[in-house]
Each structure stands twice: as C-alpha cells, then as structure tokens.
Image (tube, rainbow over all chains, first blue to last red; front, side, top):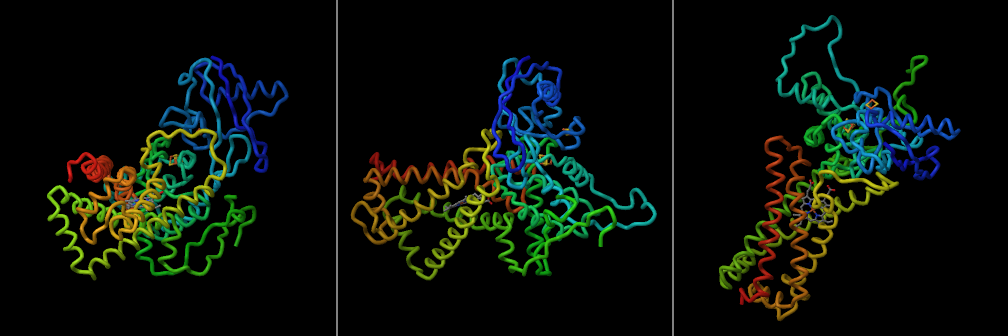
Length: 263
Length: 236
Ligand code: HEM
Ligand code: SF4
Ligand code: FES
C-alpha cells in the first residue's frame, strides 16, 4: 500500500516547524512505527534527516510513543498506542497527517518528539509513601476490599504517554494526575500521605502550565490504558477535602523544572 | 545533600501563603469546585424561575399574585438578588479566567484535532455562558426595571409586561436564542458539576449525563413556549 504522509518537521525548540509531505510504500502487516522506519530508511539512503519519533517497547506498555494521526492521539483505533496500531487500519492511497502532542507543558524536542518530563515532576511532587521497612510483611496482613484493589490496579495501568493532554482542548493532565492519585488513595498503603499528596500534585500540575478539566471526556476516548474520568472526580474530591482539612498554611512546594533529575 | 553521580530533587521555595481561600481559587480544581457550587445556586434559581413563569398559563391573577407575593418581603427579595449576583459574578469570573488560560496551556494550535466523544454543549460553555450574561442584563432591564421594555411597562405586573414585551418580535427572538443558550449550558453543566465536586459512579454518572441533557432541553423548551404562546395568540 502507498501512503502520503504530511509530517510535522521541527529541528528543535526554537525552530518554528512546518509540515513536510512524504510518500511511503508499506504493507498492512506493519505497525505504524515500522512503516515510519521504512520511511526513515529511505530518507537516510537519500541523505536526508530521518523523522524523529519517540518509542521504546513497541508493545504498548512503556508509554514512550505517541503523536496525532489525522487529529486523533495515537491514531484512529482506540484504545491503543501508536506502536500497537497496524497498517491494516488504513487503506492504499490514504493521506495522513502526523502532528506532535501540543501543549505548553510539553515542549517539542524534535519533529514528533516532545519532552514529557512535566509528568515525571507531577509524580515526584507526590513525594514519598510511608511504608514499614524491615523483614517482608505477611502477604495478607493488610486486607483490601476487592473493588478498591481492582480500581487501584485499573488506575495504575496508566503508562504516562501524555495522549490525554494532547486530546484535551485545555491541555490538562487531569486524567494522568487523577490516575496517579487514585492508584494510591484507594489503598491502605496510600493513606498516610493521601491529602498532602493531592495538594502537592495538583499544585505541580498547575505550575507546569497544564490547563483545567472541563469534563468533556476527550482524554478517556484516546487513553490507551482505558483510564476513565472517574479518576479525575476522585482527585477533585480528595483535593477539595484536603483543602478544607489542611492545618498547615504553607502552599505546596513545587519541583523546579531545571534543578531536578526530571528536567 | 546529594550523592555523587546523582541529582537531588530540588524544590522551589514556597512563596508566602496566599491564604486558604485564595489558594483554592488559584488552583483549577478549586476554581471548578466554586464554579460548580455557584452553578448549583444559579441552576436552582433557573428551575424556580421557570416554575414561577409557568403560572402565566394559569392566568393573569396567578402570576401577578405570585409577583406581589415575592415583592411583599423586600429583605428576602434583596437577599436573593444579592446572593444571585454574587454567584453569577464568581461563576463568570472563573469561567472567563479558565477560558483565557487556554491560550497559555496550548500556545501553538493543532492543524487538526478531532473531537471523539465530547458533546457540542460541553465545547461551547464559554459562549453559552457569555450569551446568558448578556441576556440577564437585558432581561433585568426589560422585565424587572422596565427601561428596555418594548411596550408600556407596569410595575410588578408580569402578565401584562410579558404580553406587551413579546409582541415585539426582536424581543421574542432574543429571548428564544438566550433560552437555547441556557439549555445548552445546563446540558453539560448539570452533569459536569458532579464531576467537579468529585462525584462519579459507573452506574449513576451515565444517568446524570442523560438527565442533564433532558432537563436542559425541557427548561429551554418550557421557557421558549411563553414567547411562542404570545406570538401565536395563545396568551392574550
Ligand atoms: C443561569 C446562569 C448559569 C447557570 C445555571 C450556570 C451553570 C453552570 C454549571 C452547573 C456549570 C458546570 C460547572 C462545573 O463544571 O463544575 C457551568 C460551567 C460553566 N459556566 Fe455557567 N452557568 C450560568 C451562567 C454562566 C455565565 C454568566 C457565564 C459567563 C461567562 C458562565 C460560564 C461558564 C463556563 C465557561 C463554564 C465551563 C467551565 C469549564 O469547565 O471550562 N456560566 N455553568
Ligand atoms: S491517563 Fe491514559 S492517556 Fe493519560 S498518560 Fe496515562 S495512559 Fe496516557
Ligand atoms: S513504544 Fe512503548 S508504548 Fe508504544
């Protein structure tokens, strides 16, 4: 199958960038990224700069890959990452537009690669989790309601790809942050720091320049991990409770963008 | 303290405390919670106002009597007005601030971004909101104060005022357009307010979402029926 690709090319953060059109010959058994590998081999052979895109596992679990295909984060087949998207979902002669995640909090590194360290800093802002160290605890010493553990596990499926930010009209990372809040707040082990954690993570989310949640649900429509916006409601509830209950008056300490391992 | 070869996590020194309420307002989650609470106040008013309005179909004595009842206790009347004014100002300020922030959160726009599941109502909240704001000012000047009234204005005589006002076609059209805005705003708002306050459940949320769409539509249609009834001569 022959495809026409309109790909966003941008040398670095200060280059304004533009779309460049390419033709590529692929077959339907390839994954989308393999199709781009073919394109890049051709570009290298011609002495041109290959298209930069992020990837690692190529099996939908690491969260490195992702860009918009024809206006949809991770392409038209949901839920799934772009590395798990196969060319059989497209047809011969199709024209596709590839665009990077666009958000102030995700500066473009090159072409389709963006810097998603802001998500790491939100997690880091959550801080530590108190656990008893020493000998391994008895496996069933802490009893957890099945429903809660299931929901915590579902939230923990978030791979940090950033598609939710990309699909949100306000570039909010609410689905991501909500998932990270939920996976701990539902478990007994997450209780000691539950309320300070939500204040700090929501504070970091804001200071990173992400937007607000307007409950329209575009994030959950593209999330490859199937995270639902119920996690955002959980985060909202914990944030409101924490704000009402807090005794200390210091505002959240935000993690600096330059002076951290997550630059 | 840092270990050789590693970088420690540095935090920016927290600034002076802005106070709990201001900190809540400054975080988008807190701001949305306040929008939700003020939205509830305004929605309850919209329902009450609609129920009051529907008495126009009972007759002139019913609705005029109701208006006189509301005007009997001026302290209560003004308390309600002040609460509503405060609610709408907080709500609108928050909504406009959040809307304006969109230019900061995504400074470079997409060439193309497809909406997959969001409703039209959810994507136009700022426009239905601005429409409501403009309409409320006009509406108060028209039927409460009377200075923007098309026909002869009579104090606390809503039946006569509604009839004389809506016989003027542009006034009726403005009213219908504004009510479509209210319907859309409620369509998404009545569902979103639960989400903003942290209430979501796989069993109830879909019902809330459908219910909000139905209630929004019914409120709009019921309000719109009044100018239609006047123009078609059903109310005379
Ligand atoms: C009758 C008057 C009004 C009612 C009943 C009402 C109700 C609501 C409700 C219930 C919400 C949902 C809140 C949430 O998501 O937590 C909402 C959202 C919103 N309202 Fe209103 N509202 C009214 C007037 C206004 C006005 C005058 C504006 C002025 C600009 C406005 C702008 C907005 C915006 C922009 C949102 C969406 C915020 C977002 O999530 O991005 N509304 N409204
Ligand atoms: S919530 Fe879903 S879309 Fe967002 S970062 Fe996690 S896996 Fe990606
Ligand atoms: S490359 Fe790991 S999820 Fe796509």
